[in-house]
Structures are given as structure tokens and as C-alpha cells.
View 1 (cartoon, one colour):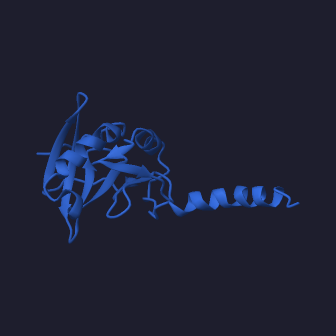
View 2 (view 1 turned 90 degrees about the vertical axis):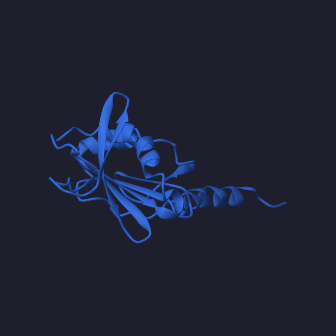
Length: 153
């Protein structure tokens, strides 16, 4: 009679490996250990732009979706005064400002006037004309980072 214990042991060992396979590789930002990043990351939405949240490989990072995911990193270098395009998003009585940088196949957005700053990569294939809508969905979480006094002009 076969012993079920080896199959159970194999299943127990395989379960953690299966969880690791779904993590999306993201490098941590330089200031990811900032305690305010924890508050931001605890408030990120479970769904962004209709895509489900997925685990990532680094502290203070998040991703949504499998193919062409949205990728967020808290703790990037806060931008100083700039003439780059800036978009103000009203959320829950707070305004979160965002710099929008046009890259080849994605919009790289960085929170402006918040420290630590948050970066969100929005693939153009996902949101060519709806970057503001995506930013509105994450701005409530980003508002958990304290203001550093800079604002969009």
C-alpha cells in the first residue's frame, strides 16, 4: 500500500515555490526603507486600471497585471522645481501632483511635492490617453507621503 506522506511532503514543498513564480521583478528605489513608504504601500489599491495586484520582489514596490503591468516604486528621489508637465489630481480632499515623463513605450510618472516620492510606470498600450485616470486610482495611497512644500504651477 503506498504511503501518502511523501506526496503530502512534496505538496508542502511545492507550495512556496509556486508563490515565488508569480512575483514580478522590480528593483527597490533608493529610499524604499523610508517609513512613510510603508504607509503608502499599505494603501495601494487591489485593482488598478482593471488589473489585479501582484506581488513583487522588492520592498516598497507594487505591480498590477501580467502582460504590460503597471509598476510602482516608493522612495524614488523627490524631484525639485521643474518645468516638466505636471498634473494635479484631487483625491479625498487632498491634491497629489504628478510629473508625467513621456518615454518610448510608457509614461513614467513621479509624485511631485511629496517625500518620499512615488514612481508609477504606465505602459502606453494600457493607458495611452488615460494616464490621469490611473493616477487618480493611486493618488489616495500616495497622499499618505508627507508634502515637501512643492506644488504644480
